[in-house]
Image (cartoon, rainbow, N blue to C red; front, side):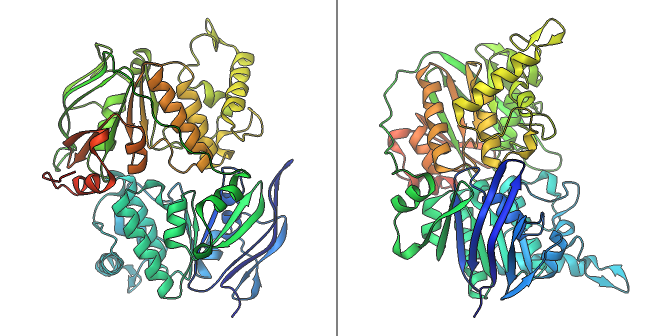
Length: 505
């Protein structure tokens, strides 16, 4: 049988940048096919071409052996192809069921059949184990649940070929296993799954084959059952993997972040954050682990000034910033790497240079009195791009033109450039490649070594375990447990994440 989806000789240029250089890719019916590569390797460009978001400059797309021209995503969806993007295409003000059926609503006598729509969403959610309330307002849901809504959109449209672009970047380990179960179920029903990821363990666990891209070209193809993690890493990076050095022991200093009985309420719901207290000391990384929706997002928003808490206090280096705005938090010595790099961490239409200066643009060296020093802004951006290996194509390009991983590097570079006493890092390695993960981990360790206080909020248990001196587990808005790093392992944390208070190490 011909491949369900095939790309032949795909070429795509952006000015002088050759993003895709004669790429060939074939995905069989009922196959889970992974695509890997470092940030800027051309993965997202290729996926956007396959989904009809942009045309190739050269090459051909074939579905079931027939050449097709996909003029738009609507054209791709009509042919049974659907894509779940890193940045979700959802309406925050609509309910779950309204988002799922939007554009393909069940009707009765030309009118929207709300009962049938809700029932359809509930049936799909139950069949594929995608737990979600059809009547929940999407804007109130955590990122992990929103991804389930995107997948339900695809299932509602009877997808034959599903493209998942970094789908596990927003998921906790239990949610990840649930997604893998959905992928296997789809493959068993003859749906083809194209799975873009940076995570080796996931590729080896769920994919049948993997295609590796490097610098816009196909670097290697593997059957996952017949390869090794080291071989894939070498194909991605052009070098053998480097083992992580052991973490140096440090004595923690004075308290720099002090959170006292912090409470965040939501109308008509249990408290999102329920009297949470903890401290982070100089020279310490405190990790917060928890399944999405257990209060981490609201906690961080209150800590950085994005939403006022309903009770409790927040002190930055003994300065009370409980009711302060974001700018005051910055002035008090807080740096923040947000979970959502696109909506919160950057301005897509602004230049890379302006994004690098954002939040610091009113002070020296970027400003002289009321005037901004454009040369200083551009020079600082160029230096950070070089230091952090960001593939930017120039400081005057809009930040929205960057790949997701390179945008994350930009945000990290900016937040660490000013020596803030306290760093809150929320999902800092989400959607970045293996090399960038190593780099960001090294940067966080360097912040710790420099005597700064780091609060790490991550869905990656391996990241929490590797970097944290202490670990806080959040469940239903409260700190369920506090562990020293040496007393925790993934199994123990997994039980605590499920709310088992009496879990034993």
